[in-house]
Structures are given as C-alpha cells and as structure tokens.
Length: 377
Length: 120
Image (cartoon, rainbow over all chains, first blue to last red; front, side, top):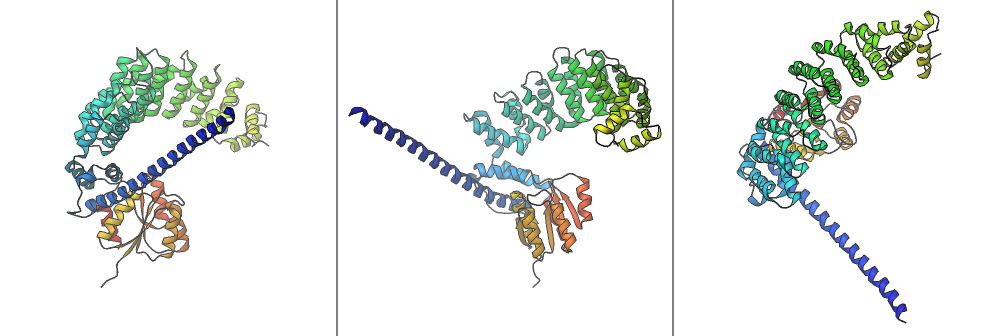
C-alpha cells in the first residue's frame, strides 16, 4: 500500500512545484512588462516636457524633484542630448544642473552597492558629458568593473577632458584587451591631442611589451595626424619587436606620408616576410611610381604573399599597370603569375586578353588567371 | 482666419518626433507623424502637406526611396531631408530627387525652425 500512495504523492508534489514555478515566472513577466510599459510611457511624457523646454522660449512647464529622480527622466534626457546641438544643449544642461542630475549619478556611481545602478550611472554620466563629472569619472578609470572603466573613459572623451588622455594611455599596458580597444576608440575621439601622449607611451614601452604599443600605433593611425610620421620612423628604427614593427608600418601606410618611403623600401629587405609584405602594401599607398623597380623585384621573391602584396601595390601606383604588363614576360614564372593576378584583380582582364591575343595568346600566367575568373575564351 | 500650414514629420526616432511635434505645434503648425518609411510614403502621397520633414534611415523604406517615389509620382510638397547619415552622396541624390533642404543630425531646433519658416 505504502509505495502505491507514495508515487501519486510524489507526482502531485512535483506537479505543484512546477505549477508554482510557472506561475511565478508568468507573474514576473507580467510585472516586468507592466514596468517596462510604464517606464516607456513616462519617458514619452518626459520627452514632450523636455521638448517644450527646448523649443519654447521661457517654458514654465514644471519639472518636479520626483520626475528628476525617475530613471525614465534620465533616459529621456540622454535621448534628447543625442539629437540636439548648439544652444539647445545649454538649455538641457540648465535643467540637468538645476535638478542635481549629475550629482545624483555621481553619488550612485561612487556609493551604490548595486552594480546595475552603478553601470546606469556611469552610462548616464558618459552620455550627458558634463564637465562637473570629470573628477569622478577620472577616479573610475580604475574601477573594478571593466564596463565602468570604459564608460568613465568615454565620458571623459565626450567632454574632451585633456588631463584624462595620459591616464587612459598609461592603462594600455595593464588593461584587458577589450577594454583597451574601447580606450583606443575614446582616444581617437580626442584627435590630435592624443598623438604625443601615445607616441611617448610607445617610446617608453616598446622595449617591454608588444600589445599596448601595437594598439597605441593603431590608434595613431586612426587619428591621422601627420606629425606622427617622424616619430613613427624613429620607433621603426629602434624597435626589434616584430608586432610593433608591423603596427608601425601599418600606421605609416595609413598616414600615407612620402617621408616614409626610404624606410619602407629598406624594409623590403627585412628577414621577416610579414614585414616585407606590409612594406610593399604601404609603398603602394604612397602613390610614388619611383617604388615600382623595388616592388617588381619583390615580385620575384620566395614568399608568395610578399609577391602578391608587391604586385597589388604596383597596380595602385601611377604607371603600375604598364609595369605589371611588362612583368607578364618576366623570366621568373612566379613574378609573371603575381603580375597576372594583380592585373586580374585590377579589372584589367579585357585589355589583358586583347593584348594576349595581339602577342599570340601564349602568355601562360595571364591565360590561367583569365580562365580561373571565367573570362577566358 | 488663415488656415494652419500642415507638416508631415517622418522619423523612426521617438525623441525627434516628440521634439519636432512640440516645436512645430507651438509655432502654430498642424503636424502629422510617421515612424517608418512606408507610412511616411502613404501619408505623404494621400495628404495635402505644405512641407514634409523626412528622415533618411527608417525601417520599411529609406527616406531617399520615399522621395524618389514621390518624385516619380509628381508629388509637389517640398521635402526637407533630416538625417544622421554624414554622406554627401545622399545629400546630392536627395536634391536630385527634389528635396528642397537637407539638415544633419544632431541639429539646432532654432535653425531647423528658421529653415521651415523660410519654406512656408
């Protein structure tokens, strides 16, 4: 009898627990949905209220303290901040200051025990970009939470707080990779103000580690400051770290300065094929046809990627296409093959075929490439 | 009593719709709203608007596609393009399709209102 009673009882208990859990989940979902709807409705009302203050002179629509403390009001402020510019930002700033919005968010960021509240506060401070939050944001560049460190840097970048540049750059060596990348984005936003701090950082650190200096070099490349070319050439001369050398060549290529051509030409003789290939690509970007003889020589070398990079670089230079046609008849079949591939990539197949027909259609590398791309006869 | 000028605002951003609705209504215009490209196209095709403010990046149809259709159908209402796309080509194509003005986001509402007044 006993086991017979136990089984239905156990089934009933399990069923009841499942039903209770399910009911709890449904209830939670309903509550969450209602809260979201209510939040959105309030946010919409706040958007109208803020719109009134921004677009109507001397608006007397009241903003109460309880409104100003509402997260929906903060969201509306952030949304509005992102669509307006000029004098209207000052109007919004007056509202923010009058109601202590920044102070409240700084307090949450400094003291709240809830991570979600601290995160929201950090995002709000980053989005609102008010100078009064600069010192607080500076102190959170060391926050234990990576996302808060990112938001702190973003906020400082938004207000163009220059004392933060050195602080952010100095963290390149110790930060986890994805935070470092976001720091780099912030520094790009600072523009040329970040160039020299980045160069100083690379000069000091390139002997000790690769990752931080390499990212600093990529950041410089994005900033596009011509003043960086000379110091980058010095770094290229000094460093023996392959990753940093490659990042420097990439940066020089991005900056596209003719000053770099001597250094890049000599790198075509580097013992590392990666550097030879990068140097070839960078020379293609400088636009100087004087590089063609060195590049066509590089098309004969042992490494296929270097040959390919050199031929592609030649194709980008003035008179480069003619040089590639000449290389089709090179004694070195690998050079001829690289030239044919670069011509095909440059969309020269039609005229290449006409030319091949004119010379007797016996240029093997060219015909192979025309055939592989489906344009051969 | 002169009739109120009618303006259609088409933008998928709730914030921009709220801001423009408040600003335009406060200035005495009658305002209709669309939050995607298709409803913008339908409202613009069927309504008799004195001005249409059209966002470029909207779900359904891009602003440029909407203005191209109106252009092909001979819609006469002046269109002011409002866009976050920092792209000269889009600006040129918008003017080619008959846009009378082009304003980039973020914008100054006072400047936008001045441009609207100039067109009406």
